[in-house]
Length: 187
Length: 149
Image (cartoon, rainbow over all chains, first blue to last red):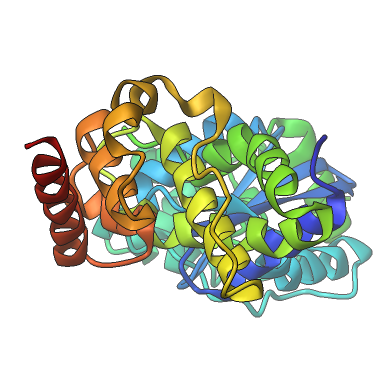
């Protein structure tokens, strides 16, 4: 005898409603760039993963935020809706709180600057480094982009090499190109 | 390290549900199931190690099953066996000594001396506090001493 999907869903929703979860996550399926695993905390959106392998992501969420990590659809609903709108082309800016408080100070500063890069535009690693207060940190900024915990919403796909080459993307260059095309930033 | 709650829930949910359904019937087991895992969730970050997670959650379930039976049949003799069949080894060793204890003292004694849980974990399991768990265990031990002397 196994539990019914209804009972399972009911428990997951009730658990989220208690406010006791350190983090909740769910899979957003079938986006134009594949399935995405979205993780949220009380403070906001904490993770977006490409090619999600839930077990590894779970361990990492538990290490960072605490052991009470549970898959639950409700806490992720708003992010799911905004992502849908983004992929439909009807949303050009996300209206979501993020949780990057566990990251080092410089990373947070760079990610906050990154969030200012507008839809349909691109910038370079060097420019972003300068805006974050350290023009010589282009390489460090590259690493921070590579480890961006919230890609798409914190738009590291809009950061390209000085010559305009796409350079790299943690989710693969194909996804970067796809996102930039969606935004009309590539010819 | 304590596994993420998702892993714990996924590992034990079907067994907990089977246990509750066998005690309470399928329909009443649904509410008890939710209550069991919500209680486990409340206590989860206080756990200090991942040993005995299965015995722990089955004990929570058995307490909730007892409360459910009691609520519905306040005068009837309590017949629910608080121990799941497969969770028995530690209990069986202690069973001949603890059978006559009131359910709460029996649970506290077995969890403390059979499963080696600390009082914070026992409190979480029984849905009470650390002091009450300590008192229940020592009251149980006192009662056992008296019975055996």
